[in-house]
Length: 455
Ligand SMILES: O=C(O)C1=C[C@@H](OP(=O)(O)O)[C@@H](O)[C@H](O)C1
Ligand SMILES: C=C(OP(=O)(O)O)C(=O)O
Image (tube, rainbow, N blue to C red):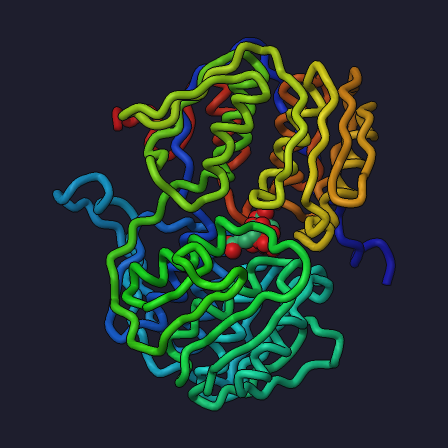
């Protein structure tokens, strides 16, 4: 209906060029994956619990809004506890309740919400409709829908194996044994396991199919379930390969402290690597299931060095960046950031094992190839990843396809290439709403909510 109704083009954000080496301490907000699992487990518990230092972002907001819509109480508090730093700061009190519909869950473009909540909805009394961003209609969900039907659920969908759909919650789910092909997303396995203590028979999930990606995220699910009191059998604990079992039983209301999001630390560590500077990330866990921990190894192989100290992870670059030949199937969400660094390296890189990234926020293999090449780079898609030959790049618009990790990858390239403009940098709000400010603060010498506060 004419020009007045046209949506304005998203703003362009001039990615700052680094004018020297970066030296900063960057406090990274909580992990998306841990926050959204903690919320689900707390909502399914038999007593109230706490989620401390949660991530506050679009994906975690969608998760808490959806749980609230099904009846769960989530009270947001800020505590200045004398029990130590881990207990102070933002804390969400989660008060479980009988889940009910009718309601509609907006999943946005959050894989964790669109996969983890349909099993929860089977436990609700009433219809729970699932809808989301246009991309959510394209991201695979069919394996979860079919598995839930096998376990006793009633789901009304249009037969495409994707959103939108309605779970006709019956207040309980029988559970039992189910086979799924989770080669497109580890989240299918995590989804079935997370709610399984509340299924009458628990669950036995048997993955049948190609290579299962993102295993650390499945280990995160298992560890968090166990921390909440669930009994879980895993392949690692001497069980059958690709088979997980969760026994039925009550979940405890726990006090969970969310670790910093190590995958969101990636662009900041990359800045140290590229500029030959030092970036410290406080509270880097000594032991974690987060895939971002692999950055210590990967970015060291690409030319940096790091040390885990009492101040956190101290990562130092030399300004020299080496190419890498690496299988990223376990840590797929790190691919855009690694590709950005690889485009600036002194030799070719091959990133393997990540065909499933074509089904993420956007087709990440196509998007990275197109956008890096538009700046003069030389990237080709392979069957399961990317081949990146570094070449002198120039400025231009870096499109982000509503993918937070495309935006941060573009910012990394912009540190070394003048005139890169990131289209819709606001899309980083999916998991890191303060990214533009954190980035400019880092370049000024510090970043993060506690920076400069003497913390
Ligand atoms: O369970 C999780 O929290 C996640 C699992 C992974 O998904 P895929 O297995 O679909 O790659 C990861 O990429 C995503 O960012 C978060
Ligand atoms: C793949 C990702 O997200 P999602 O949880 O939406 O799958 C990601 O954050 O890289």
